[in-house]
Amino acid sequence: MTPIEPRRRIEFVLGDITKETVDAIVNAANSGLRGGGGVDGAIHRAGGPEIMEECRRIGHCDPGDAVITGAGRLPARFVIHAVGPVWKGGRNDEELLLISCHEQALELAREHGCLTVAFPAISTGAYGYPPELAAPIALRAVIEALERLPMIEKVRFVFVDENLLEIYREALAHLKA
Ligand code: APR
Image 1: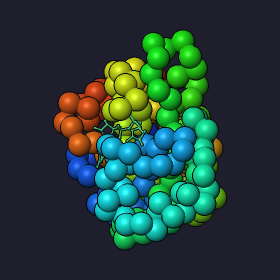
Image 2 (image 1 turned 90 degrees about the horizontal axis):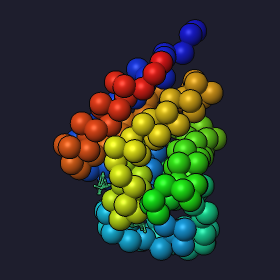
Image 3 (image 1 turned 30 degrees about the horizontal axis):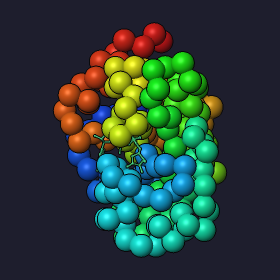
Image 4 (image 1 turned 45 degrees about the horizontal axis):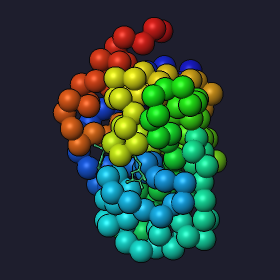
């Protein structure tokens, strides 16, 4: 069977990622896997202490990489903790690191048999990546990964902010095929 074209496997919704009933939700984590504010804080609050216990055992994740844990009390089966780049003006490998954390997250999802994955807008909050720049990079990385990973049926980007959702929607519409 021909897999569905990657763009048609991407969707955008407004909401709280912790409520998503998908196989894996992606966390915008830090290298120390210590928890924090934003999505990270919301995931650990809603998911309970089990997720942090697993994070402590894993201990570290480099920027551009991702690790996986269970999802505690969350409806998802897994949390994939992806570490995006801190925005420092754009000449410090930010783009490469943003691409690779999306790729690694989807690779881990595949290894764990996940068919549906939800992403937040990694690096666009505390890490300061301008969303207009982050959106096409994140989307291109996901599209290219989905070409290689036909078993992943759905990638849902979840936003708390309608403006951000519009920025990602526009970016997808303008990406060259
Ligand atoms: N669901 C979906 N999106 C959310 C949620 C939520 N519950 N909470 C926040 N967001 C959005 C923010 O609006 C932002 O656009 O997620 C995006 C990413 O923001 P951050 O969570 O600040 O992530 P990031 O910019 O990658 O910074 C990571 O922040 O919380 C710390 O421990 C984390 O140190 C790490 C850093």
